[in-house]
Figure 1 (cartoon, helix red, strand yellow):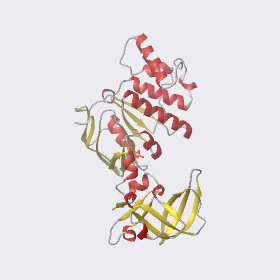
Figure 2 (cartoon, rainbow, N blue to C red):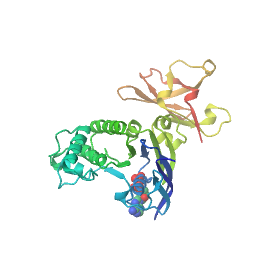
Figure 3 (tube, helix red, strand yellow):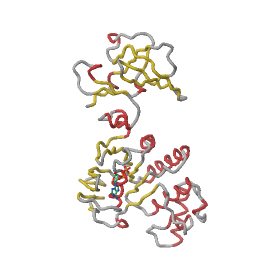
Length: 326
Ligand code: ADP
């Protein structure tokens, strides 16, 4: 039996219906991604108990919590806007949901958690004096202090600058690894989802369209939607590459390689060779060039270490990196 399970949960609004089933193992880090309006926040609200589903069940450790009050679910939440209590100092914020009643032990625990999130000695600070990154670390410590069975994160880093986001996401993942907490993490930042998650759930139009291991989701997406939502790539009608094949072929820019000399497909039986690609653009990003090519009128993206000198190039992609998608 899975540690957490949402089974056939449905929530209908006037113009939107969410219907989802998925499960998580204890200690797993699952991210939820999807376009804006796909139902990520609604799903999180149903799990947390902020909203009630119209049907379906939610269980934790085999216990049905679908009708359980928020406070009784054993779920802590970390929000984008930190939601700290302004009238309490930093350590009182952390101690807020603690089960421990003894004052000295509460203090000891909040000091330890401050150290865990890298804020040793901040206990007496007024929360209004904290920077965004510090406030989010306090919110994280407060969530852990409540000893929840699951921590839900709702876009926790969206309000922070990019370098700080990277730093904090590694703190969150590090704490998850050392404490073995079960995490459900909503983000619109795909790179962030890849960096922190064990598995990633993709939502579209109120439905769960796939749940996969993070690396597998990137390398072996099962639809063009997921492929393009999780990164860049090239989609071509499959019959252009393989005779009589239906659907599309898809490959990532880093799997493809350009050659300025004409390549003959016979010499590369393990590769898909696209001959006579016109170079349309070459964008330098620092580590590499992203080349925009045109093959029989279709756009093709290829990563390259240098800019081609010729206007026409060939492209080769290992066949085992080429996906056939419906
Ligand atoms: P996401 O978090 O992926 O951006 P949301 O879960 O916020 O998506 O919203 C999904 C859809 O549900 C949107 O079309 C939104 O307008 C609708 N929705 C969310 N909450 C409510 C509500 N309380 N009443 C009516 N419609 C809602």
